[in-house]
Length: 174
Image (cartoon, rainbow, N blue to C red):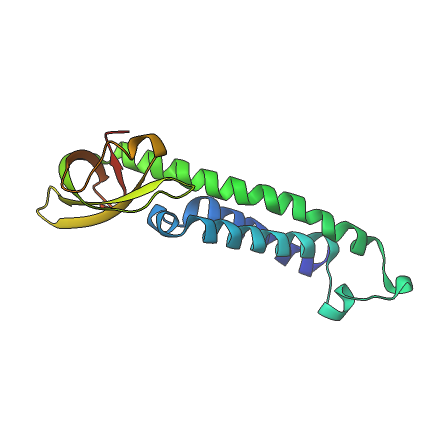
């Protein structure tokens, strides 16, 4: 096995470890889709290089039929594992966020200060609450469609927040 493939394999493993467990939960909570797509893109690149070992971009993009070999036929199929990794990274990040909230949760009461219009993903409300340490936090959180009618601006709501990351909030009306 040549040295280049070993390097691509190590980078592939580091990418998986980074996006699966090393990136903090707070990063994923602010931009989950971007990180899932970025991780899957790096995974795709390193996987193609591990399997096909293209040495230059011109070697990859050759249009001449006699210059194409088995690597050019295999490389497009590497998109399938990359697409799977989008779901793996995204779903695992959501599970890590739920576990972090469950393990370090504190129940407090807050007040709904704003409600955003309903979108396809649900509705958003902004909640103002005071942490156990006395710090006031204003956090936007999502709601399901069926709960939107129940919550209005100025309403007091019970919520759970993560002690380590108070921006992670879950309303108890759900």
